[in-house]
Amino acid sequence: MGLDSYIQLFFSGITIGSIYAMVALGFLIIYSSTGIINLAQGEFVMLGGLIAVTCHHTLHFPMPLTFLVTVLLVTVIGTLFEITCIHPLKNPSVLGLIMITIAASILMRGIAMFIWGKEEHGIPTFSGDKSVSVIGASVPPQVFWILGVIFTVLIILFLISKYTLIGKAMRATAADRTAAHLVGINVRKIVLLSFAVSAGLGGVAGVVLTPMTLMSFDRGTPLALKGFCATVVGGLGNPAGTVIAGLLLGLIESFVTGLVSSHYKDVIALFILIIVLFVKPSGLFSKSEEAKLKKF
Amino acid sequence: MLVIKNLEAYYDRIQALKGITIHISKGEVVSLIGANGAGKTTTLHAISGLLKHIEGEILLDGRSIKNTAPEKIVGMGIAQSPEGRHVFAPLDVLDNLRLGAYIRSDRQETARDIEWIFELFPRLAERRNNLAGTLSGGEQQMLAFGRALMSRPKILLLDEPSTGLAPLIIKEIYSVIEQIKRDGKTILLVEQNAKLALKVSDRAYVLETGKVVLSGTSSELVQSQDIQRAYLGSSVDGFLGK
Image 1 (cartoon, rainbow over the protein chains, first blue to last red):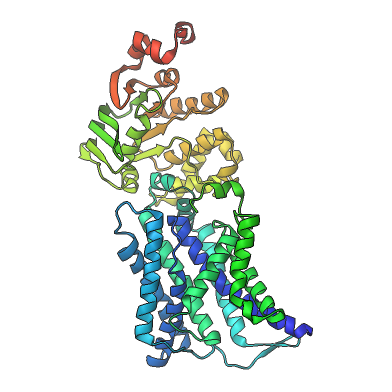
Image 2: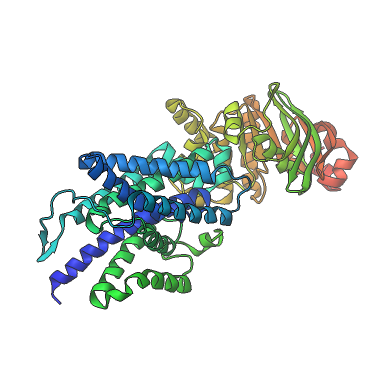
């Protein structure tokens, strides 16, 4: 096998890895502010893809508008999900809330199947199909769109959380809820915001991914599973670690698929998860003292 | 200014407060003293709106603040420096202080207040860019204290500012309490260390298993036989410098 094949595998790995990273970050943001693992996280990606399909093919929106409308709609869906399903509960247990997210994920899948049917849908790539040659390997241009969009989003998110008051308030709430209450942070608003941002991230991932791989109603769950693995491997609490874990997972999956056999594609993430849980249960990028304080 | 009448509080089915009545006037420093589990911290949590199951009345300037969201209570002018510090560990000292002013929108004034906090606690100024989680226990206590001051509260609730700290640090913290008391701040102080609390406060309430068992001016309480026996230790006479 030549160098070009390795480069090809690298690009396909980093591409799918960046999608995993987005899903994983969505898990992390909601977990940090509420302690809930939102298992409907993958459905946001699926909805992002399918809403984009409708925007583009049925409503004939140009691509930039499709992108904006889709991300906005998925964000609204995520917010409504929190308002209707999570918030109204009196004295919720974390486990009960996780059950609700499972139910929500099944419901969203059902509704999506009802609206878009069982077949796969696609939207055109953002800038044609002419492959770009990178050191001998031919890479589809959509790969650069996916990487570009996702890393732009990650950088924006990083800047917001680091330098704006609302970003600091989000981190403060994740660090210490009681203290957040005591300085006057509206924790309820932060929780709502974290659902909105997580859903938005899923939406972005869905729109950029769909031109590459097509989208159908049942594609969310496997993505949620991989994203979840990345979140846990990253250590549930460290955004940079989570993104790196997502990328690593994508790369390993791509290389094993390419070099060993594609039969193992979906096993790899779980295999890595089990190994990490055996060897370093706190995750690769988290301190074990921190992990002791977590409920899961 | 702050009036609490027949306050009862429950954790699940356990009754932590059994009808507490206290009041604090403007410019006063009032302390709640008593052993572990007497209900001191619970009282502060009830005032700050952190408890769901409470009965009785909590009035701030005549208006009920019972069942008000904690963030609104901060907005009304009651800030708390919680027990066990509760600083925002992954954020630096400056950001912790900035978040203390979360309810305020006057940026320049906020920046000036941060400098004021640094004057009160010079140690914090040295460590302004360090993560709060890396500070020593004493520094974290100062930070929690400073953070509570950042909202410019009408009433400051201080929960156990001396617990687990070295004597020198305690002295430093209490000198700041003295200082802001001279500036006319109203303070409700919770302390296990009765000696310290009575020294700095004008009046005090003694709590025992969720009830007020004794109250009066601090100088009266220091003289009281019961207090000496229960909270100040028998050799107290010499220690209080009579």
